[in-house]
Structures are given as structure tokens and as C-alpha cells.
Image (cartoon, rainbow, N blue to C red):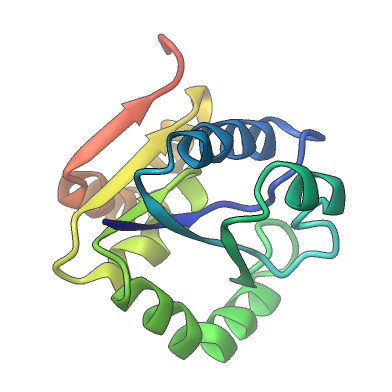
Length: 153
């Protein structure tokens, strides 16, 4: 089985990156699942110490748009790397968005593949406070085969 994970970074510097790195480290230890990880094109997306020491067996691709910054930049990177992202997801059996902001990308590209989304506290409900995101995230969450919540919130 092959799972394609989407996350912003693999490092211990920030919460999402720490969660993603910890989860993938455990998966690598179990050695039962083949993984590919799509990360943001940001400069520090993959910490070299993390990749070399704990996640060297996982293929990491810097193809996702940055989470923060102008919307135009995000759209540019998404259009530029759409084919690469689609090709990587197509080779997988399951798509797992480890952070909420990449849920819509996973939703649009995964097509008929099972989609799993991990939700982190207030980030899970934030899109429902924005009128332009509410409808998108409603569809994304409904399509997900599994939703994993890592907090009681």
C-alpha cells in the first residue's frame, strides 16, 4: 500500500511539521507502508537533519504551494506543479492531508482515491468563519473517508 501525505514541512520547529515528522517516523519504523510526502516549496520545508536522520527512506517532493503569502503566489505554484502533484497522487492508494490548508488540493486531485484529513484544533473550524472558504471545506470534509482530530477541540 502506498500513501501520499501532504504537509507544509518536515521539521521539529513548528506544530504541523512536528506532528507530520512524528507520524511519518512511526510509519517508517513499522515498515509496512510505502510513503511519498508532498511538502511546500518554502525554503525550510524539509529540515536536513530530520530528512537524513529519521526519514531518509521516504520520498519527499517540494511541490505544494506555500501556506502563507500572497494568494497569487499560491495559485502560481499550484498551477506550475499541478501535473507533478497529480502524478504523485495517482501512484498512491490513499491520500492523507496532514494539515487542513492542503485539504482542498487533496480533494481536487485525489479524485476517487480515499481521502484522509487530519484536523488540528481551531484550524479545523477556521475556514467556516470565512464565507469564501465555508463551501469548499464543507465539500472537502464530506468527501473524506476518515477525519482524524488530534485535539478535543
